[in-house]
Every structure is written in structure tokens, then in C-alpha cells.
Length: 533
Image (cartoon, rainbow, N blue to C red):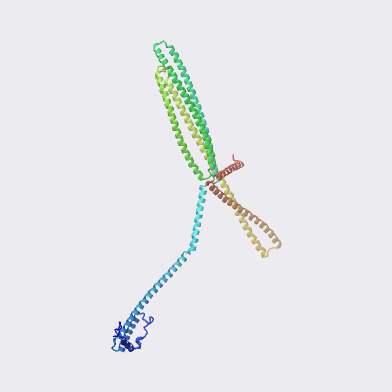
């Protein structure tokens, strides 16, 4: 009636008797993980020993199979545990291999990086190389900009003088153009006055002819046909006189208006010339560099275009006015033709051939005047161009002479310095040789004194030569410093001229004008001193 063991099916009494009958080796401590086999051969040996142990247990227990079964189960559990342990060992070996390979790869990478650092010089050498390359690039850019400024710069004295001279010649050209225009206007006014005088004489002749015709008509009064004609003329005389007076008033008004317009045009042109002269004077003072020159050229082109458009508009307006005048003139001519038709019988005495010859002479005379004015303008333009070319050539020749003179002076100074250097070296060698002779003791006291005095003289000459060389070096350094200062001043002048401060620009323009005047005076004095007329 007692419970049984769920695993073995034995009761407590049976289990107690079985435990008492079991040998002491059955209760031994199981093997530890250190005692378990690690390889396949050791595992086979271990399994074989387990089977032998199982057989020994069965032999010791006799026919009782329960103890053998329990021992067998324990052995199986130990075998599974050993298999897991062997798998864990294999896994640890694989992890260790991976770590070793990783460490080896890291070592190889560091070795390769070290090889690269040794091969290419490292980061510091690369930084130094980049710094040198940047410095070489800046040096080349500086040389390029200096060459560009030397070739295309416009701040040199002879170029500034040339621009000033061109501005002066331009002002002279404007003045001569104004004088030519004034002469042309006076000639036109004189010609118009002569035409008015001729018209007046013509009117007087016509009036005399009219009176003659009236006298002739009065002599032929008694004739019947002339009586009818006189009646018709008497009927239309008042109307004709009224229309003639109206036409005379219109012509007088038109003549006065034309004279007033001509005077107003002349006055406007005079004021415009004065204004432009002032603008040109200001602009010529401000043309100090290439940017202002380009701006001036653009403004001049735009002004010329605006002047051309304004001229076209004025011509169009004048053409419209002349069209109105021509319409009035045509109306007047139509009226004259109507009168001529009415007076055809009275105008038979006129000679058309003479009239055509006179008109041809008038047209030919006007054409000749126009051709003469055109030829005069062309000759004036050619003379101005030749004068400007001659002045540019003279400026270039003066600059070339100055450069050649400076080169000759510098070459002579260099030759003199080289000669003095050679003499100095020779004196130094002689002095050393004399010192060696004196030290050898071959010379007498008197000879030694003479050589000492000669050495003092040579020392003084050497000091003089050194002072001369020092002065030459100082002169060269002063020239270089002056050149650098001039370049800095030119750069500063350019920056200040390009800036928006008009006060500084005006000061610089006044200073530049004074420098230009001083340069002109210096050149004149040099020409006078050299005997050039």
C-alpha cells in the first residue's frame, strides 16, 4: 500500500535495499569538464571505458537490471554533456581564429598605412608642398598682372601727357569748328542779304515795267481791244493790289520769322557750345584711367546718338515747317500763275532763255559754295590728323630717348662698379701677398715702412671704393623704393579714382593738372637747354 517511485516503479523499502546493495563506486563524483575528452580519439576511448564500466556494474549487481539501467542513463547524460562541451570548444576555436585574423588584418592595414606615410612623405610634407605650390601660383599671377599693367596700364607719365594733349587738341578742334561755323553763318547771312537785295531790285524792275506797261496801255487806250483789257484790269486792280499787299506782308513776316529763327538757332548753338566746352573740360580732367576712358567713350557714343536723333527730329520739324512754307509758296506760285495767265498778253516781252540761264547760274553758284565748304572741312580734318600723328610720334621719340639715356647711364655705372670691384680684388690680393712677404722676414725695415704707407694708401683707396659702391647701392635702393612708392601711389590713385568719393577725385584731378603743367614746363626747359628749337 506504499507509493512507488514514478521513475523506477520501486517502493521505498525496495529502493532502500537497492541502495544498500550498490557498491561505493556507483556513488562516485561525476567527471568534471576538465576530465572530459577534447578530441575524437579521446571521445572513443572515453565511450569504450564507459561501456566497460557498464559491463562491470552489471557483473557486480548480478541479475538486478535496475542498477544497470540507472548507471546507463547516467553514462548517456555524461556522453551528451561531453558532446556539447566539445562543440563549445570548437566554437571557441572558431571565435579565436576570427579574432586572430581580424588582429592580423588590422596589423597589415597599419603596416600599409605606415608604408604610404613613408612613401609620400606624410601629411606635413604634403602641407609644405601645397604651401609651396600656392606661393608659386601667387608669384606667377603677380608676374602676369605686372606684365599686363606694364603693357596696358594708363598711369605712366607719357601716356597721361598724350591723353592730355589729345584733349587739348580736341578742344582746339571744337573751337576751330565753331569759328568755321560762325564764318559759314556770316556767309549765309551775307548771301541771304544779297538775295534779298536782288529780290528788291527785281521788284523795282517789275514795278518800273509795270509803270511802263501802264503808260503803254494808256497810249493804247483809244484802241478798242486795249480798252476792253484796261476795263478788265481796272475792274481787278483793287483786288490785285489788296492781294499783293497781303502777300508782301506775309513775305515780310516770313522773312522776319526766318531771321529770328536763325538768330535764335545761332544763340542756342553758341550756348550749347559753351556748355559742351565746359563739359568737355571737366570730362578731360576726369579721364585719368582706362575705366573712365571707357565710360567717356560710351557716354560720347550715346551723346552722339542722341545728337543724331535730335538732329533728325529738328530736321523733321524744319521739314514740316518748310512744307508749310512750301505750301504757302505753292499757293502763292499758283496765284502768280493765275495772274500770269491773265497777263499773258502783257508778259510777252520777257525772255525765257535769260531767265533759265540766270537760274542755272544761281544753282551752280550754290553748288560751288557747298563743294568749297566740304573741301575746306576735309583739308582741316586732314591737317588736324597729321598734327596729332606728329605729336604722338614726338612723344614716343622723347620717351625712347629718355629710356635709352637711362639705360646708358645705368650701363656706365655698372661698368664702373665692375671695374672698381676688379681693382679692389686686385688690391686685396696684392696686400695679402705683401703681408706674407713681410711675415717671412725677407724685407728690410725701410721697405716695410714703405709697404705700410702703400698699404695705408691702398686702404684709403679701398675705403673710397667701398664708399662709392655703397653710394651706388644706396642710389639703386632709392630708385627701387621710389619705383615701389610710385606703384603704390598709382594703385592708390586708381582706387581713389574708382571710388565714389567725388571730393577726392577732384583733388586728384587738380593735383594731376599741376603735375602735367610742371612736366610741360620741365620739358620746355630741357628743350631750351639742349638747343632744340
